[in-house]
Length: 441
Image (cartoon, rainbow, N blue to C red; front, side, top):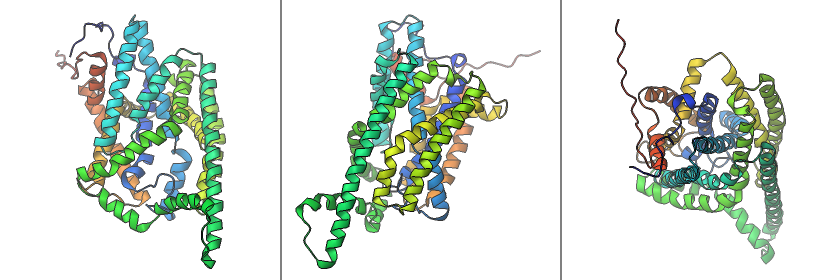
């Protein structure tokens, strides 16, 4: 694989050029996002509403509550933030080496290959929660904003987040209308009165909500998901398509692009290199968690107070983006303080190795879960409670924390990172590190 258009000096980042704090953050986020994603791998429709499957009492309720308070949305936000930073650094380094328009060629080719990887990951790796496709598209939109000052990046991101908040408010208004009409329909039932035409649309909408809680349909879905690979592929393909259609335009610009821009902004301010005064990071932790966790706490308590009702989820979603933004900033501060601390050096190196191989490890999550949660392997989909899924999360964490640093002792990159670089630069790069014999006296 060769290209005369790409100068040999335009090479991927060397190990010594890497920013360790970003690798550590990327590793922590890669591990942390599995706490949320494992519900999609192992349970039916159970990301936000624990009453659908997996249990919502005892340890299951605690698991749902803690995950929703600290991790829901925030791991995805950090991943988006890091992706924006990564693409900015990628372009900046190429341009500093005089790549000129060649930098854009490599950048956009990199995004195109990521988009293709995302399609393969979503469909062939049976993961409807796939995000790489969305990041690739948002990466195209990041390009013209990359050189703006942090203030302008934050203003644009704030505008995007505001649109998302407004949209969520109107979604709530729509849900409240459906809920009110549902209550009217319930009042008509005892007298067997006909449902007026103006209420039929709300009845159908609410029925779709009830169908997700139907034990027979859940059991039917669980059995279908625990069949062979190709049966599950056919089952999940429509979900993948729906996700890339509706969720893409409903959420991604306000959810993903906004955090990419914020990431570039705070990187330009030097916050993500873990080199700022620790007081700045403490301030991020205090303000981020004080505001964000308060918002999340109020949201969750509203859901619990209303016994997981249809309208309570819609009402809590109004402030979802605001809560996750502040908790995400709290996470940034906490991770940078962790990077600055003199302790846990060995653990930091392992986490950084996981981060250097984030693409490979992300695919590994899906590959492992295919074996665990489909009939191709153990067929555990729908058979474990919510808290029991955390045992699998812990097992995958341990595996990746051990395997990643070992792999990087012998190889420059993770296997998918290497393939992505070769395809982006249209040039073969060495994968295996040369053998250095021990010096003899």
